[in-house]
Length: 575
Image (cartoon, rainbow, N blue to C red; front, top):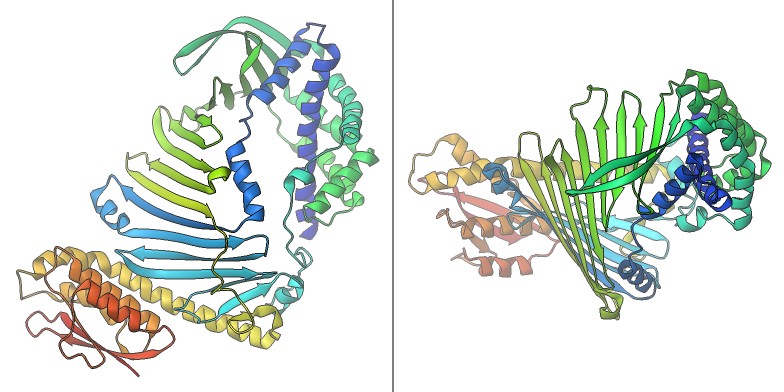
């Protein structure tokens, strides 16, 4: 099983090398033979130009922000909401809200944040996270009152305590990887790959595989372009032959094999050169079993610029990419008549300055919009603030839509709050537990998590039926049992003699939301401690919430209306 995993890594790395070889080949041919205007030369010239043309320019606005984050503390406040064109679905979605708040100081390796889910302004779930030095921890006050943390060292030992038998595939410590550095090649490495594999590729592709066509018309965004196209046609046998020749050369190329092994190790894969050569041998032997298809590559030149490229897989698919004035279009066309679409289009429009970046992405299936994403970043490192908005619209085949809206503010500060900084008094580090104690902790937390989530899901499930029944409550004292159950179930889950403070707070917030509903006159009165009159207003209930402590235990009692059988009073007393 482990060998299979290594083989997958080897194949992935090998394919990456092949892609690199093709890219280097195109650039080298342009530089070496640009004076010779053969179809072969011009194909690779405009293929090379296209590779550069399809790159989106560097976003210096975000790059500067990322650099500033390395040296300065910052906070993030984000909020996600949703809606729909279906009124019933939208009524539920619009009551839900997800909030993200975090504070980070990378210089001192400290961070804190919380992830909160609310429904109709009542808190459904709150997860906190905190890290200090090499310890990363989470907690939810409803489940456990201290942080549960993992120290980023000796992770294999921790996994063994948790019952994992084979830990050979896991690291002892998770390291942050600099992928730009990992995939960077030196001039000497590039030179070796170029000199070793260009001859292999050139000898594998006959000159008559290249062709030229003038007067090819390309249309994008309503504009027609008169182009000259250059085409490379490869048969299935030629595709197989190219791959086989590259792999056979790679098999005896010690320099590139060492390079692959080094890159793989940097990515966390413990493979030897022998593992790689074994994997290459397997790939060569399996080439005959691969069903290659005749494939064509086409590039389109307009006034010296590559404006489009196509890959055509015979009788299966045609994929094309167009690039015109900060507008990239990607199309996938079905040629087999077996897919549930004819053409899928993706359009990417973008604008970038030092203070604002904007991306507009739209995906269509047969001219019907499936997905749209609008992303805007406003701000700069100089202003020490970045506002982000992201609007996502998803459309189904039945023309139903779901809209997601995310708004975030990142702001640099002089210092962040350290009240939630983890230490030996507020954090249980799992690495330090014995196997038996660790399993007991995990089991207890899992059991409590299931209990809390079951309670939350039950409240959510009955919410809509309770909400829809409100209008009838005001005018009908003879309510059927389902309406009574739907209303009362919103609150009965929090009734009892030993209720934690955080659950009492949740109950109070649900009561406040109920009492402020414009469609509901059945207000619930809250009596706290020695109060005999009770309160129903939101501000008064918020005062009670501020007095309740999460770590304390309370007795919560419900009183019911004799006429409607609905809860009309909640009595809260500390045990």
